[in-house]
Length: 407
Ligand SMILES: Cc1cc2nc3c(=O)[nH]c(=O)nc-3n(C[C@H](O)[C@H](O)[C@H](O)COP(=O)(O)OP(=O)(O)OC[C@H]3O[C@@H](n4cnc5c(N)ncnc54)[C@H](O)[C@@H]3O)c2cc1C
Image (cartoon, rainbow, N blue to C red; front, top):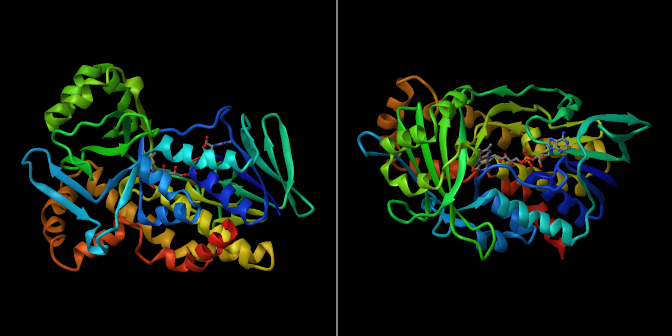
């Protein structure tokens, strides 16, 4: 088939590799003149890593990123550890890999370039046009097509979402965060853990080791500070020194990181929004990644979900007799896993990002105690690793198929 992939984020790039290796003619469309990633760090869970392995890219990613085995959350005032989730209950070698977004992007983008897949840059997708069973992408400067299938990988603000069978609108979440990339510092931090500090749920600070952007580059960490997006202007007005003092007050060990942040320009404001397409498909169009479902990054699943979507779409297209059947199969393969994680993210986020006192009280008391009683550690590890409802088992056949195609 002739397939347009709109958006060159992790979802779009992975889909392009899979579908091209399966024998389809793919073309990528991206708004940036030079494709580039936005933001700082992210966690690749065992689910996302399995998809990267099927693409033959896991080794490269693992060599760049940091192996993460635990998530540790501490109450800023008492110093008490209130969250300690490890991957160990799932097996001795189960872990996540935290990476800088640029590292994930570069590995996928390099593979796309090496396979000579065409990327049309500087193309701002505005809408979809249809005629006689074919699709065209309409941009500000003309249209491109015809295509048998359009894959929408434009992220959560995609203008193509109106083409879904049951369109949905993203609902902004009250809290977002500012993210920055800082040098890795050993003192006070663990190389194998995402560490967080909380003050109730109105303050959350995180430090995530992300390895290197390039093999010869310095070791880095991502630092984030939770805030309401509308309050960022006031924070900026008070000045960088005042903000750094506030962070230091909660977490003195971040001093060496904060020294390197001299301007708010070094921090990216991320707004979070929640939406789930009931059916991630429409006539001649499939939705993957954040365009199909987006949420807060509290559970660290977004990029992994995009990679799982890419694998599921490739599998569905390989196994079905018609495009319509393939899109229905794609929706079926992802339905319950996506819904479960969307609900979990929406439910858990206020425990870490909200104004009230009750939820953080429950988090630090009841939940923290229950988290030590078997089988809860196993359950938490399964949840964080993205493996509840075992999305990979549904894709096992397909992973084998992808390997065969890749070979
Ligand atoms: C601060 C933050 C932290 C996160 N942490 C994690 C984490 O730890 N683990 C995790 O798995 N996920 C995390 N996520 C979520 C993750 O980043 C996303 O889920 C993932 O990037 C989605 O990939 P995607 O390819 O679907 O979309 P995107 O990464 O949003 O890519 C969309 C692409 O489409 C392009 N584009 C957009 N609109 C247009 C247009 N109209 N025309 C042309 N091109 C367009 C964009 O330039 C971009 O290249 C985090 C997200 C944020 C914001």
